[in-house]
Length: 172
Image (cartoon, rainbow, N blue to C red; front, side):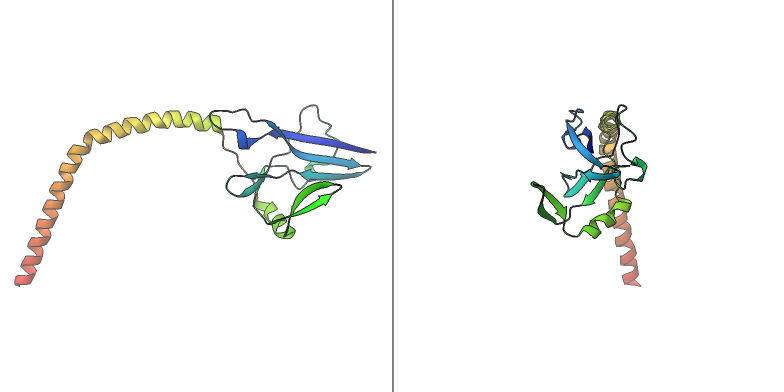
């Protein structure tokens, strides 16, 4: 007897600071056949020419005995991979793309943790830092005439000093 467990999550490609509600997408499919489990990880293309997979997070109502989740290679964390060359193939009438150099693709598994932007915190930080930046900028621009006068005096003094020093050397 076979069973299917589908694990989904929010689509981060649609999340932004304006809209923090992504739509639900499939992230992992687990098929159980007798005592065997087939784990299918759904990879999505992200801007920046890389492939991404979401973390395997079970809902509270999910069957935690469905598979040995702690032993699965994928899913503990979200991951990102350099976009490999993909081959189109058909499995049971379903078109799928698989990496041409599968061993290179799997070689990235050990260091492929992906941290998504935390948009709410980024928006809050932007609001605070924008206000600080504005006040610093206003203070800087109010000092700018004084600063430019000082720099002109310094340049003028430096060029006179250089001219005097080189004139004195050439006369010796």
